[in-house]
Image (cartoon, rainbow, N blue to C red; front, side, top):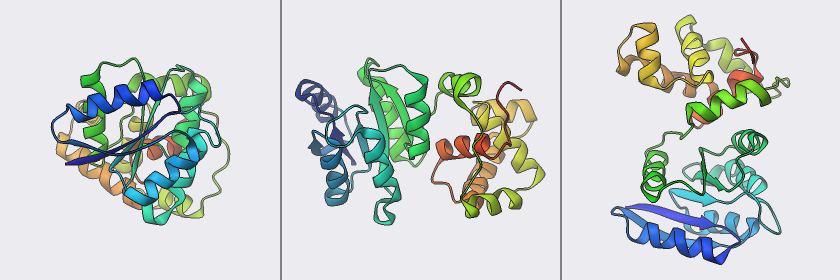
Length: 221
């Protein structure tokens, strides 16, 4: 069973998400939170596989709550899926920089939400190419990296790994990268796994952020 938590300040939204989870095979609801502080406590007390996180909540917002969860070494297995009504690029970028593993709008069909939960529970990241390309166009500025581990990780990448990281940063899926580079899909997946290990990144979403912030991918090119 995939254990799921819900963090949203609107009772009606929580009720709707609860219904979807309870009626989806293989999913189990293990707790709810109505603000960011409660969301962090939910993560610490129940360790959900996936935590559905609203952005605008009282006390502490979803971005800060995500930051605290990702920073906790005891919560490395908790994946945060941001759910919001705000289709604004700055929220996407803020959520990814905070360490969220996925981002969806609340108006997605129930089956798409369930599929997203399962993707994150398997340790993957849900980063739609359309969202990534919006980041490229408008919000992927390049502040200097301050994480020494990430810097060392980039220096350890092989030429092929850098090439694949660039394509991930541009929003290509593994299948698209395999086609573009004329290699097997399994080969790309293996390279992505090695890149994550070298960077010390928890998932593909963090890899994309690092691709921009390191200058490996330059917006507009």
